[in-house]
Length: 311
Image (cartoon, rainbow, N blue to C red; front, side, top):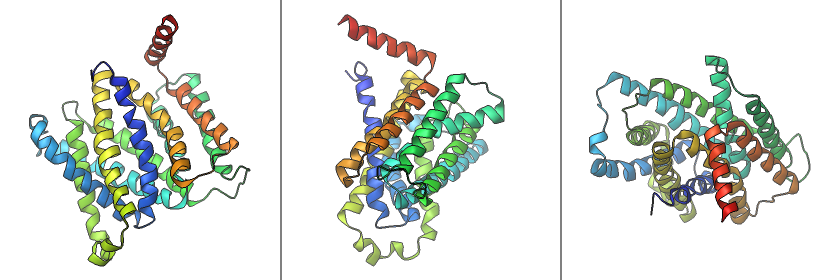
């Protein structure tokens, strides 16, 4: 049953990742980005490592391999620390919807970096998709209140850009240094553990009993949600999807994240989703699909549409 309806199960990923923007907004109201990342990742490691030890002991990489250690360091610096500190910092200044829309441009930033650094050729529809998505993201951020306001861009959007660039750096460096036989689940678990441990010395009194007791239930639930659902469940399902269907098929579902985040933003924070914001979000989604949809994915969509037509 799981294999038969795998596509439906895979829809859990964009919903859990969309929810992480909402949960993160609750968290950053009560603690700084460093503390948020530390708690999220140590909780994630506490859930994931026992599971891997019980179920995936045989896939553990050789821990004393110098190349493996270098790869882990790269992942921790770019993904664990870089991306997530920028991510939580962005949520302190801007809405979950705006954060999700800009960070959804990660595939384009990565693809552009590959194009310029490795002289990789891209089809014209890729550049057209980027223009649409980037224009949509800027439009949404300028039209937060329903009217275009060029003064509305600020630190939140700048931190979003930092997160997107950190993710690009992570993707390129991790891809260049990872050996195929290294299990990605173990790499993620070590990333969570080491990132959390590295941040502890920088937290000061935010580990004191008085500070911990001041965190509300909403803040703790937000941390638990982010530690378990988007991190452990979301990333694990994504990893399984990449193994079963390939990275091109799996990444298509991420295009749903901005729209899902916008709906959740309205439900939890009564965020105003104006017509200009709707149009901008639509542009982002259309651009992402136009620029990143592969020939195999287009054939998959055609087969699904033909099945519906015949039924």
